[in-house]
Image (cartoon, rainbow, N blue to C red; front, top):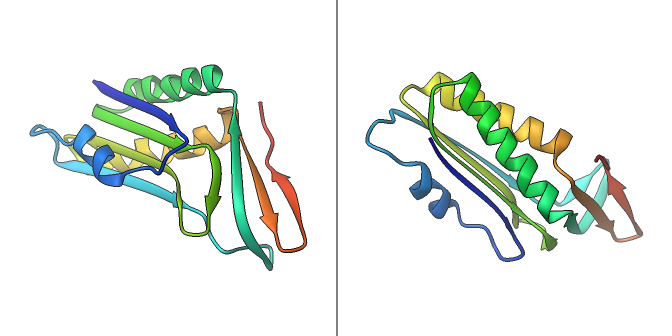
Length: 139
């Protein structure tokens, strides 16, 4: 199985992720794109800041990919996450998964984003017009 893991301070590219997982043996490709929205809990979001402990984050992202491959018959998985300051509309995370059949691609992609948010040491700070807050700090 092909695994593509990346943390980046630069803009993420959906086409790059798609190209990394597209294979002739695959009938299903599922892509999750997480973007910065303009509000949270009724407050206007100005920007987000993502920080990570990069060595551990990359290791955990690889673990998610390997765990997904053990649970579903996948051909390839790409997990890219931004760090640094992001504006409303910017892409924060892309997960692309390919498999022979759509069910495995959908299920593995869902598993990957949920597990990433729970276990990867990437921290998000939301900046509002009137303050800021760290969100869902974990490991």
